[in-house]
Image 1 (cartoon, helix red, strand yellow):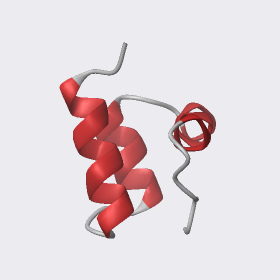
Image 2 (cartoon, helix red, strand yellow; image 1 turned 180 degrees about the vertical axis):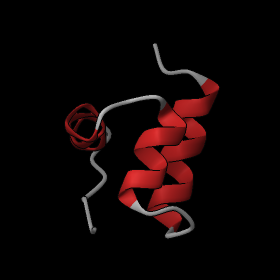
Image 3 (cartoon, helix red, strand yellow; image 1 turned 90 degrees about the vertical axis):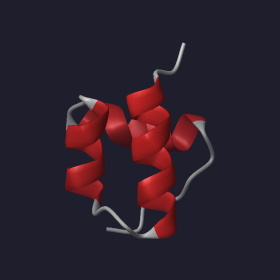
Length: 47
């Protein structure tokens, strides 16, 4: 289940407010885990 922090990080990343690394940190995930999460949510990685 996604947490509020994760959903916030995904939203801010998708809007371009956070970089990939910043969003991964905010979500509490490693870069690899965050990349998988982006794929799970259908959000393209752009950094």
